[in-house]
Image (cartoon, rainbow, N blue to C red; front, side):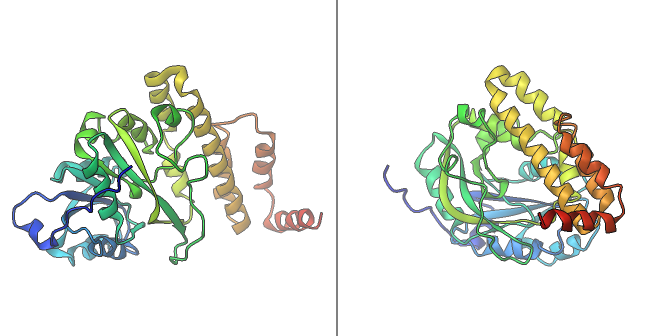
Length: 321
């Protein structure tokens, strides 16, 4: 495959003269005062500068609104009652103008060549509906953890059948896609608490291109209580995928169930180690909605009812074995 030509770049100032920018960066934010300034700076530091920035303040109750005001005309801000990140992304895209849509969450960051390299691929091939990159996981202090959701089996551009065989590790903040493909696939489903179905639906609109460079930094913050908020209405994902693809999607539905059990169980155990028994119990009970046959989960729930002194003694006893 020929090397893509460099993406066309202009000064950021040219996008404010009435001309339509090439890229719209869409950022949903809810109570993101601690990170939103640095997130925006990662856009301003891009080598590709023909963009606009649309931030959707999804009902924040912290200092997010006042921080966004400091950026003045450099960004477009939409404020709405809290509706979830799928609805916030749709609202931001509806207000945006560009042919390419770049997603960025309010606690993730782009490396400087993220847009340049992604857009070069879209410019080269009309068959590509969406470009996404590898990602570097970081902790809340910005330290790289040396991990990525992409493994040897998924480090390539997927076919639709592959995406129906298992959950594919596409993180929103790694994505740049064509507006036309987004519109044709029906936008993000606002009733859902997750965006997993969207990647499958938009794959129907064209090829995906995986860029195997870690051009996005993903923040691995505390999972509780976020894991419970994002788990709500998960049955809608299952029902939607099953009705759209039937038995063809049995693999991805099994993968989804395993993923939900694992993340809820691990979050519950992490909260129990912190001494947060009520949070641990909520997570473990929620995991049973995906697998009611997990005998160990029932034992772990019972364990959350014990005093912390006994729980820690049991932990020490187990560690000595």
